[in-house]
Length: 260
Image 1: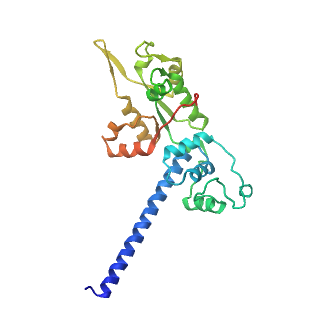
Image 2: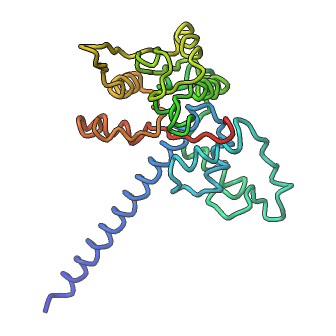
Image 3: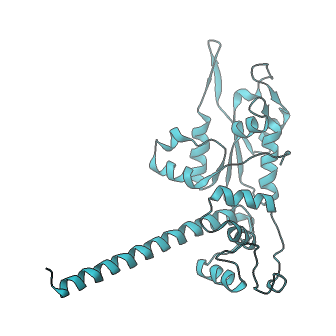
């Protein structure tokens, strides 16, 4: 039978490990939350709006769910004063860790977030033109209008560093096996230095194209920007650990609803 001293020592060690583990979990959650809020701020959303969405969805919400809710609310929204929220002072209709004015202020202070003061602080945006155009065309038509809508969405939110990659063969005339609409948009965006055609050529009657996904991921990674696509780039993510981490954190998925 172990002595009381040893049993007490084991109990103390166990409590120390538990406290250390709890502190580590809290720190990781705090870092994950900071990353989500910072990502939304870089896209041009206000801090109040981001915190309101987090209050609704909870701090464990996925970044795509947070951005989806931000898109629904729009770039700006007036926060109701606490006095009009009811006797409890809640800012939100459902309970959350940020459901009172004091806790909201505390959260802001603890995380030390600041809303970008100018458009220079917004991250570069790299759009997967083929993915966006085919998505807007219901995977049947290469709809250039979808690319224009995506570009306009970011321009309206203050972004100026926007790059769209599209394979050069999309400049060819529309064919039954590769229909394309509003093709003049591609030329216009190229003149505005927003769209870049990736190389392609014909060899003995066969089209040879480069891997435009590599252009997209490489530019976004090197410029510390974001990728707009519904592709998960799994093959490229498996090439380099740093690319995998980047794609996991900076891939912004989307959907079109009534041309929005």
